[in-house]
Image (cartoon, rainbow, N blue to C red; front, side, top):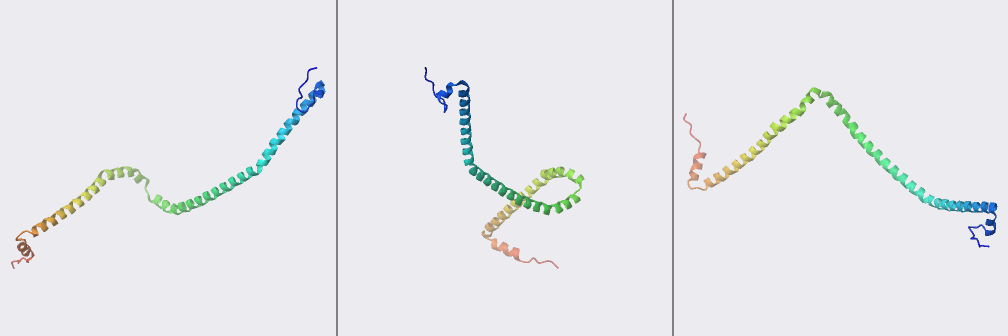
Length: 162
């Protein structure tokens, strides 16, 4: 008789009986499956405290974020509430027809007023340069011979014919 290999916990003798052997082998497989399932659940249960701690930390971080958002929203509401009244007054004064003219007015200012302001700034620089040049010329002329006589003549009051 050929020797049969023993499968699992079922002895060869029991496995040789067709009906009982099949039942016992099925029961052995189910018991092995249940044992694997129990081990897996035991591992999962052992990880449960760490998982709950992670969840708790996440909830605390979420609550802190909500509190920061609440403070930020409160500051924004306070700032906007203080702006509402002045904006309502400004809106009541503004004429919608004039708002339509605003882009054209800004274009005119950009084309004409801005260059004029730049020219005025350049003119001030040029006048300052001319003034500095005249001061240097007067200083040079003051060192020339005979400049003292001219200064005395210029300082002497003119006699008016009466």
